[in-house]
Length: 202
Ligand SMILES: [Zn+2]
Image 1 (cartoon, rainbow, N blue to C red):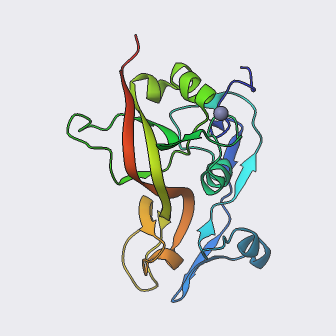
Image 2: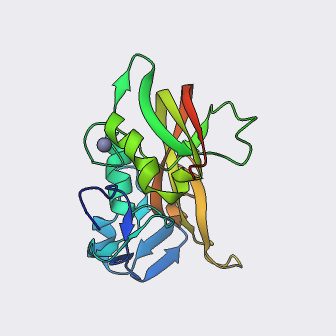
Image 3: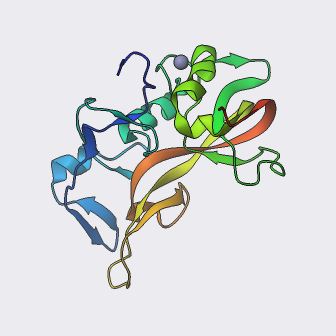
């Protein structure tokens, strides 16, 4: 597989996340290893999952985006495909998203996106590469894309029953934020303009 063509944020089979021990106290989730904990904490105070492995094997298009590369591109508004600045014009920044189940009714306002924006070249190429986008996608221009929180594993507070819940959206102003181990940064897309819809490719 040509690595220069595979989207930057796509996870490879050679990559995974570390099973570093997490401990939960009344003040939140931390890694048992203080060095790992310091490295894994972002400026908003969220604790992030630790990535390991290397970009080898096969690209895993159906899997979650690679957490470190997803975060860096989302934070920097860089292209999910090539890690260069995303495309921007008078209507805003360019986003390519899979169609929602209720795509017909959706006005594509207030979407909570964990997919970073794209440059013009990658916006055309990504649906040819990615089986999820090939099933149908929308191209949007977005004027506001505020970071609102993270998706990740939410740990129960000490003494609370239950298991950690995976893939939970936790907003930055939520009291749950200290109890999540983040895997994806989320922005809310507002003041959007639909540029094009594409149905599933054959
Ligand atoms: Zn690009």
